[in-house]
Image (cartoon, rainbow, N blue to C red; front, side, top):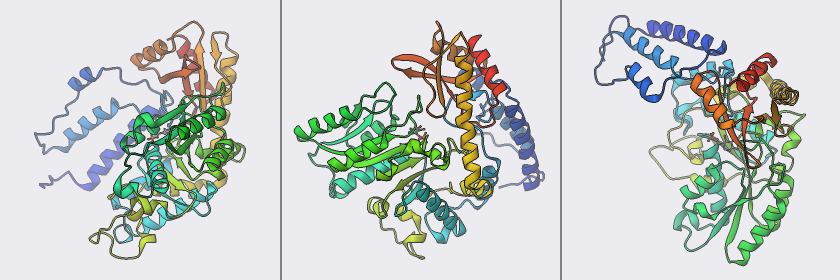
Length: 455
Ligand SMILES: *Cc1c(COP(=O)(O)O)cnc(C)c1O
């Protein structure tokens, strides 16, 4: 490459840091978002790739424009998803590990990064109550649920990994409010999306245990083979928690794998006051957990954890003598991974955890839970608004009385003011306010509600 004179590392860094600072300042001030449609936006940006350019200034100008039109989830106006806000020390570790650009399949390739990952996984498995367990970082909660379904299938049907499933009809149970990845994953694994039973929920938005047991029995009577129950800890819209203890007992009674999708809610294991929401997790075989949601780490920071050791390697190990050469399996997590080449998702979590400590997580998570209660209080006190239910965790569902939630959310997005989504609550469209960003203040909540009402 022809490195022109000023395209030095120092120039690149200084310029990058300047752009980062102005972007973050803008985001933290809660500035509105770009309102251009995809077609309009494409016209304003120079995205061409085929020219080449000797002047890096031009590239930085183009990147600045691209970033200005990229919504930041650091912005308190970004309330659309289950993540928001970033722990700065996590970013620091992230940047450092990018410069190593390690691949975490072997100790030979990644050195100390492997030990960091092992330390974090140990901490997470212990927090889950899986003292005999193990874990792996995966690219997101959907992938964690995929890994769980795979491990369960191979445990229940020992020939499946090598020979396929033959004529067996293997059945999966999950609540109708669970994440869409459960069904998607049944499709990916060839089990069939139609073999996923969406169990009805009670008024509280949790899996109805009676219906679950009836459905399992009906399936068995038909000659089908139930093998997997997913319990959700923190449903996507309502933030509700399935009764894990009851589901766990049922899973034991019928000999099924019990997975907990805690992509959203497992972080509350680190909050003393709230961890009882996950009671019954000790009966589970596996847990999906996304620290990139409630713990403010960047995307994707997700793990699959198992209560017992050995499942990961039994389902994921392959022979590759060009890759696995030294240091034994314990230090070569490629034997237990969905991926081959894999970035380090643990270092940023390690950095933030070592700074905050267990106590710091407890405080941070309590803040978010309290924020949701404050939002609910404000909504209840407002005659123009209707709270759907008291929030169970950080999701606050409500309506503007007599107005369409969908239209409000779309109008706000079109105006660039606020990104917030809608969902279903007992068959009604509601607005979902997720209090995931601990930087959100009561005054911001008031502004948000005001803007929603006047949308
Ligand atoms: C977010 C979420 C997922 C999906 O996680 P990704 O990291 O987005 O793939 C799965 N289950 C639940 C309950 C979630 O909240």
